[in-house]
Image 1 (cartoon, rainbow, N blue to C red):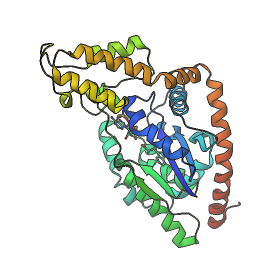
Image 2: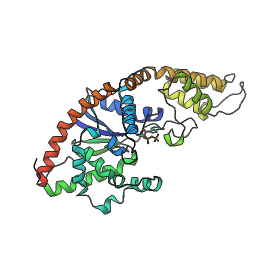
Image 3: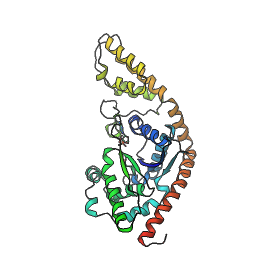
Image 4: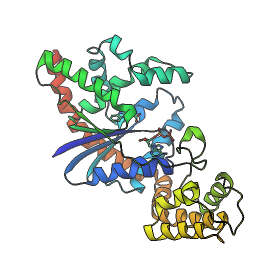
Length: 325
Ligand code: ADP
Ligand code: TRP
């Protein structure tokens, strides 16, 4: 059985693009019984940017509630919060001491972030070694990541190999599992949905707010009601197509092409489907947000499972380095 591990940033409430493009595919992978899955909320990484304790906590709750509402089964997946397993920060120190500074300087993510962000701290620089620690601590075989994280995986393999070379087989060398065919979900402006573009759709909102977002933010051309319209050039249709059956999708495409069917009609159908198809997740999400202790209990249970594995790995490396294990 292969161990699959992945971390998710706790950057606030996930939007429709995160849910359809990343969260649901990851849950499918995690729930597959052939995998032994570890999934955690990377709240220590968030400290590189978030220094407000209330916000840090709130972000974790929102992210954890989303994963649980979207179907993550914590009985099958070891689901935990990074900061509940302090073994991770200890290991990251060891890794830092084996990874050449000159190599860490080549990290694209640091260059990118240090150009954009105000708070450029040493934690941001050491970020790849904390990520390597997340992975090596749990003896992960595969790490599903997007393209932007591949370099971090290379650094993880590199530091693990350096240590193995010196001390024997301390670490399992993990492999990246590139998620290349993930769908790109468009935002209300037709570009990639992203927090930074302010074009997101929050599917956990109530009907009134969803209606407002769709009606106000999706711009359509002003062709008259009777004109034939091109579904392939329409964000309303693209979003609708992502959440309905192929029959419903073909029906809307036909209606648009035939004419006599306006953008208002299409938006109304999209709103109805957004409200309906995320109804169960919305209900669960709200339940978890209103019962944070339930989420806390799930994460604590996950942390206990994670710690067992973490302790065993940490003992291996402590012993190799000459510390008490
Ligand atoms: P954002 O762009 O809103 O800041 P993140 O960069 O935090 O989102 O992405 C979190 C996860 O969601 C990543 O795995 C990313 O690939 C995925 N994701 C984000 N936006 C989209 C989108 N529009 N379509 C598909 N996947 C997305
Ligand atoms: N750095 C990852 C991101 O920005 C999140 C992450 C932290 C991660 N630790 C990890 C992903 C370990 C995979 C494995 O998305």
